[in-house]
Image (cartoon, rainbow, N blue to C red; front, side, top):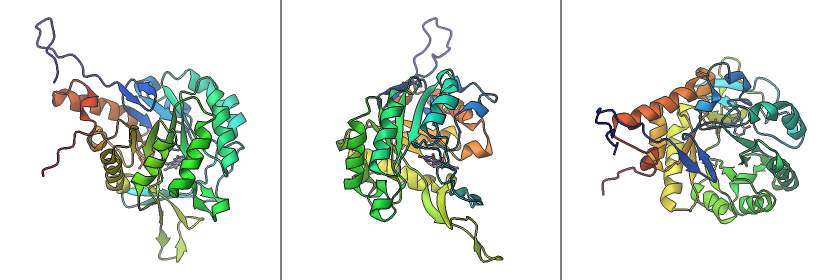
Length: 319
Ligand SMILES: Cc1cc2nc3c(=O)[nH]c(=O)nc-3n(C[C@H](O)[C@H](O)[C@H](O)COP(=O)(O)O)c2cc1C
C-alpha cells in the first residue's frame, strides 16, 4: 500500500514504477513496440524519450531490405493489417545512421533483429551484441524459414529452441524472444525459449489476417495476407500472456497487443506481464506511450499501489 509522507503533510510518496525484466532495469514498465516507433528520432520532438521505460527498434537484418510492394498497410475494424516485409537499414546502416541518436536518447534501447536463416540470425545477434548503446536484443522469430517451406521460425518449438540456443551462445547482452501468436500452443514456444537461455519473452507479434475490397474483388494488401495488430488482438494477447504466466516458465513476459491506455497496460500486468509495449496506437497518437506511462502511475496512486510490481500476475480468479 502507499506509504503516508513522513512529514505528516498527508501527501503520499509517488508509486515506484521501476520494472526489472529480462536482465534490464527500466525506469517504468512502458516500452514502444518494434516497427511502430521507427528508431525513435521522429518522436523526440513530441515528448522526452527519457520518460519511457524503453524503446524497441525496427527489426534489423544483416543486409538492408526494401520490403514488400504497396499497398502494405490497411485499416480494419479495431486494428490494422501490415505487410511491410521487414524493410530496414541493415546492420551497417543501423550502426552508422541510427545508433548515435539512440545512445543519447536517455532511455533503454532494445534492438529487434532477425535473419532469413540460422546463420544470419546468429551473425546479426552477435554483431548487435557488441554495439555500445544497445541495452538488449529482441529476436523476431515471425519470419519465414525458407528451408522449412516458408513456415515461421518461431512456430515449431524444436526449431525455435535451437535458434534461441544458437543466438544465446554468441550474445552476452539480455536476449528477449518475441513470440508469434500463430500457434495452437503458445506455452510450448515460451518454454522452448526459457529452456534455451532466453532472458524474457515478448508476447505477441501480429496475427496473420487478410482484408478484401468487395467492389474490386481484390485483396487490400499486395501480399494478400498480412499481420493484424491493434485493439482487435488485445484479448488474444492477454490470453497468451496469462497462459504463459500460469505455466511458470521461469522468465518474465513483456506484454504486447492493442494497448491504448494505462488501464490496458494494467490488464497485461494483472495477466502476468512485467513490462508492456505500445505498438499500433503510436500511429493514431504518436505521444500515446508517454500518456500510458502517466496513466499507469495515476492508476497506482488511485488504487493505493506503492510499487507497480505488485500488479504482476495479481489477477484474482474465483474458484
Ligand atoms: C507497421 C508495423 C511494423 C512492425 N514491424 C515489426 C518488426 O520489425 N519486428 C517485430 O518484431 N514486430 C513488428 N511489428 C509488430 C509490433 O511490434 C507488435 O508486436 C504488434 O503490432 C502488436 O502490438 P500492437 O497491437 O500494440 O500494435 C510491427 C507492427 C506494425 C503495425
